[in-house]
Length: 86
Image 1 (tube, rainbow, N blue to C red):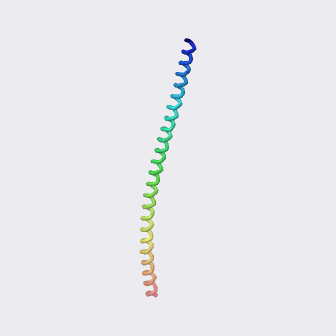
Image 2: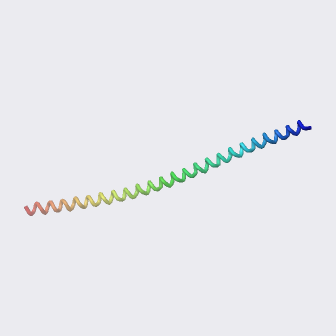
Image 3: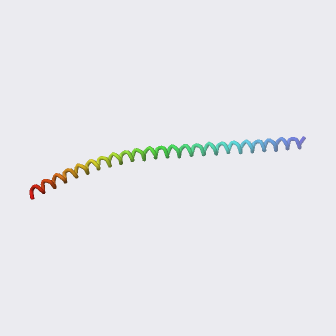
């Protein structure tokens, strides 16, 4: 009778250890999934911000090109006036 009780106790312990191992494995996988999701969201936010900054830079470059063209026109006008004065 004592041997059967020991066997049942050992089987219970083995079952408990297997159950705990499976539980910890699942928790680890869930934690990894949360970390990956958080990183993914962070990268998406970063990419979105980068796209917005690129749009702003493009807009400023267009404005600079427009201003430069206007300055060239003014300079040409000034050169023309100076040639007429000579």
